[in-house]
Image 1: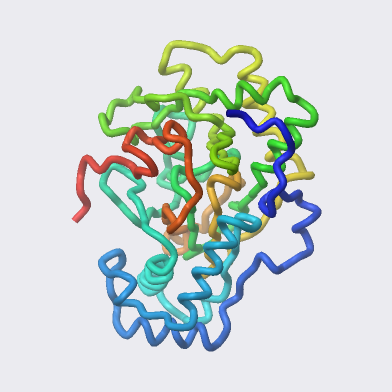
Image 2 (image 1 turned 90 degrees about the horizontal axis):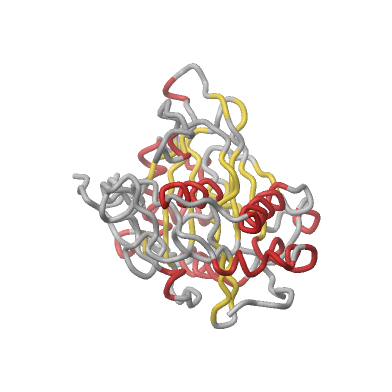
Length: 336
């Protein structure tokens, strides 16, 4: 089923509606920071502990409200102020994991089963086969990750660049419906997407079993799954080319996500946590330059998380990694 009328939802917004506002920034209060300190009497070594080990009697319910904002509101939140705790990177990692235990269930991000991913430049070339963008310093185009929610904690910002961009996928859908309605069916039909080596077979050319809609309308919710590079690489690995209409559709989604009418830019400060609903928000990143000191290189910690009572997803849309509904990356190796 395809949505044929404009989406009406709080998650449909344009840049001008968010720019100049700060209600999407959630700054920790002094009392909340004290509660976090009390929950962290020792170094746990995340991810080896759960919600009960990190009690947040006051902040915990507020995190539940924040999850509701991610799912039923604008779809993004920036948490700010953890730097005031004065923690080293290991301490920030523990706090990040502890907060997440009050929000949802984390899922694997790579073949080692890692639940906390490290986003930094490993000197790889994003243009190479199966190289994932977070392992480079390259510009990364607008896309969605394969979980309900993605979190990014800034341990160290870049020396220069690395700004985040986000856009409402619902607003982009409405614009396409109004100005390029002939593309809607191609986007709803979707594509078999390159898994970039993340599939259960481990094969370099593995793609999704099913066509994954860019825009999926299911049980009254519109959900997005977009990554231009993975769509185009998927067709190449299948030995086919996008039709002219499919290519126009893919390029239109990317162009609108980068359009100043839709694109909201934000920087990362040390201790910031950006939470995004992947079904409602496209995100990308500017290229960046690291500091000469390797201890000060740009480092973000990433979580992929499924949330309680998350929206229903169409079966094909939900199986985005060939690992079942809302499944994470198949762990062929287990990290100690």
